[in-house]
Image 1 (cartoon, rainbow, N blue to C red):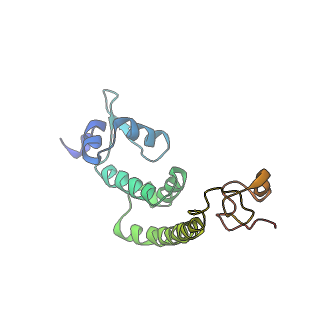
Image 2 (cartoon, rainbow, N blue to C red):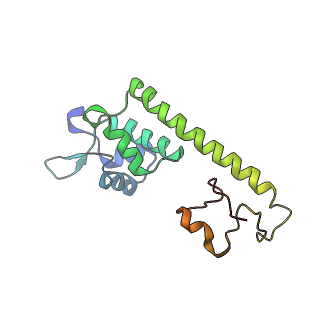
Length: 151
C-alpha cells in the first residue's frame, strides 16, 4: 500500500496491539488526527504507530490522557516525537516518575505499621480519616500525600 494511501485502523490496531475502539477513543481525545479517504474510511500516518507507542508508554508512567495530549501538542505541528523531542520530554517524565517513586515509598513505609494492626482506627494511622477531617485540605488520600492529622 503506498504511503499516500495511509494505514487503515485495522492495520494500526494489528501493529500496536490496541483495540480499534481504543484507537477511535484516542482520536476523540485529540491524540490522533486521521484523515478520511474518498470512501470515508479513516487513514493514519505510519508515524501514528510511534505516536500510539508514545501514548502507551506515557500511560504506563502514570500520565493522564490530557497530560499526554498536552505533551504531544507541545511538538511542532503536533508531530510524532523524534529522539531529540523524547530527550526533552523524558526530563519531565523523570521528574514525574521521581515524585511517584517517592510517594510509593512513603506509602509502603506508612503501610508497614498497619500490617499488624488491621483496625485502621488509631489516631496515628496515616490512612484513617475520622469524620473526613482531611477533606478541608483537598481531594485524595491527604494523609498519604503528606498532610498530617491534627492530634
